[in-house]
Length: 150
Image 1 (cartoon, rainbow, N blue to C red):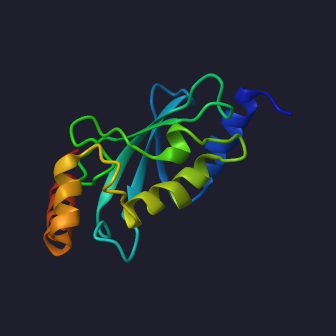
Image 2: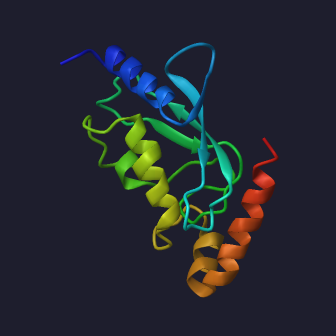
């Protein structure tokens, strides 16, 4: 099996060769930003988010740290810090996953299927459960402004 640093380099290169815009921080491979478009068929469609990724020294054996830099209104994202509540990142991470999985599967699933019963943003969770059309309007309004407030 390859060393964590080789795997980190390979996964980052694979992500950079995909359709994502990746900005390295301090020319290192452990911290970077990824520009992420909201998935089709979700109220996040049309929004673009900058997501900060930090890879631990033990990556891929330990999960990356993922956080939204610009604001997003979502039950499972802390509105102030951008921290994400996502089991596959926080508890059930496996070395079989890679960075492309995070951006092509995990984050789109998070945005398509919010879990209001395990919220980091209680207000968004309550609004989603109480009045889904109002929640979706709030989401669409917030991502219009967040796209331009980087």
